[in-house]
Length: 116
Image (tube, rainbow, N blue to C red):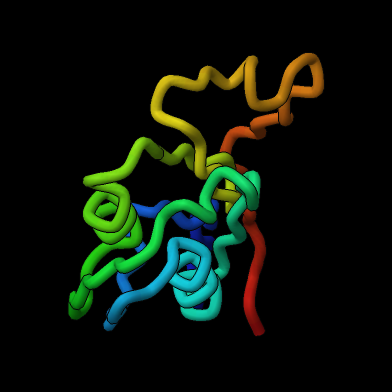
């Protein structure tokens, strides 16, 4: 017999990946993370073009920790909104990024039912 499960959006702290970046751009690093997870990144291309020469190797590390390490010596930060990760300048507010078109952040949903 199967019991109902609580299904929620993945978080960057509970999703683990392995990365091996050598002289990569930030864009290449984000593409690698996207290819290994269900997360999608949002960023201004012209802003992140300046970040190059990333060297980072990790085995089974959370996406959140990987991003903290990759962005450590840059002027960027990140914010998770559901399965989207926004790469933003560290001093930018959510209002500055989205203006009046702020995203709708829905709380986790519980799905109940039976599996046969």
